[in-house]
Length: 372
Image (cartoon, rainbow, N blue to C red; front, top):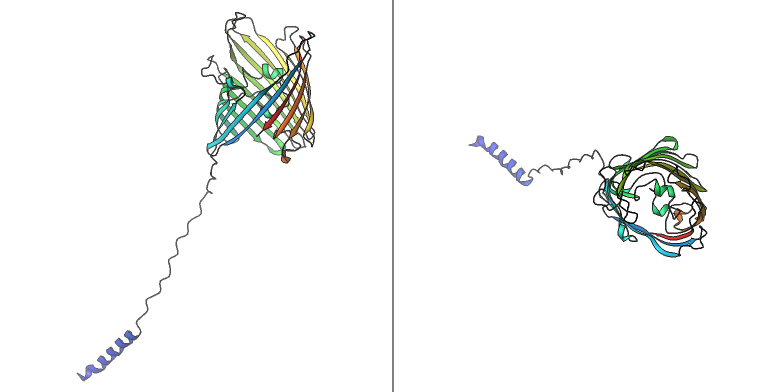
């Protein structure tokens, strides 16, 4: 019993020590969350799905001057030449739409109506109603032209029944080193014109242009070659008792542009054949124009154009010629000062002087254009 006393005292002493100072639990450090690895590619930017609204209006004055010697001139008139509203937007990355309506022509209200994609590098592909591609003047925006009447050759040789048609368009452009560039535009369309539900011939029409540019010395030069192949349906004429028929056509054109600090100039020519189904035989037509527009720091400048068009080179006496003199005044924002790009308000004045083999009347034309 005495031999167990020391062991008992030792056990009681250890128990008292533990009771007085119990062991502290080990402090637990907060867990560090695992690091999230950085994405391999940055997140794609959000696509702006809000459509943009823009447009313009052109109020035109036209007065005829006797050029035939008959002592009679067309009546002076004021009218709305164009009143267009454009809605443009995106539905996804690289996929968009464009709608353009002209409120001044209710019988031809819808002008542009196409979906487009830029997913193919250096390209825009359009599907729907759009402008056909040939030469310089016709594909140009209506706000950017300086001559109120289109050139004879542009109307007769560089388009179908209208500037626009239904089909597919492919536009490509590449910027190359040393200031060079290449581009092409191709449209495959019905050939019946805009806002036509059913094509009037089974054949499709091709319109296209390919060209190059150079602009590394203060000037911007562009040159292009255009071509077209297709047919047109001509409706019956109850007055002349001419029945309906088709015309197969071919077109070839060339255009040259020079954009400098002091002027912008264009030369364009076209040659075409027309073969009617009536059996009358094919004819060859030719036309062209040269034009120049002066530039100043005050957005005011002169303009001049000389043109001709011969609908049948084999016939004598049907050659049309016209000279146009005029001027423009731009009222626009400071960042567009000294440029020909439209913005704000533009005032144009044209004097058309006829010099055709079969004389026509001269004309004084003017319009005020407002862009918003």
